[in-house]
Length: 242
View 1 (spheres, rainbow, N blue to C red):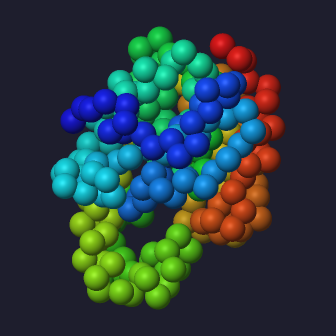
View 2 (view 1 turned 90 degrees about the vertical axis):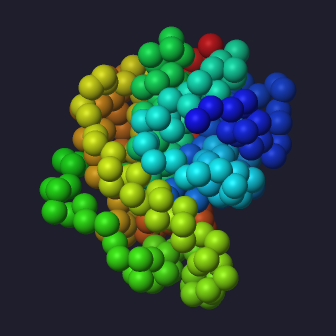
């Protein structure tokens, strides 16, 4: 599944003089619109348009996370005239990880990788990775905080979003994490201090380019009320200009 840059990315506020580009990967069931209001000085913010939702609702949902990441990386090479940083939340952190690896294999080393809603820890045991029953999805959407509870119980909304939420869940559960190759770019994880649902991944071992973990106030969707703009700006301020 390939496509041009406009197929894969949404950029509500193009900035031809921005020092670098920040490419944002949404959570399972999320879309590029999650980041449409994000503005960070010196950064041109792009949201990744996953297939199977929003503008790409007529396309099949992705089934292979690494293939998805490879397709995104192929499109992103067109932006490599300026430094590229990656921000992924929850499932999006894993997609960003594999996109970073794919970019590095193409000779494009990201300026930074931010893994949000994910913490440095050993991978969960296989028995913890049992996919949820479909009937539990509305309750989980509301509990995590990424979806308004009233909207999460709306049957018309669920009819629209359940197929790609379930598809993302199947893809993420089928993803087999690998320790190699390590990343050459630096990695910062950002996790809420009241987040029992954070993705667990051995980020410190993956980040040959340096690692830092930032604990913020909030739950799994801390970034809805308080996006981590200050964290991103601080880390990106020291990133090479390319």
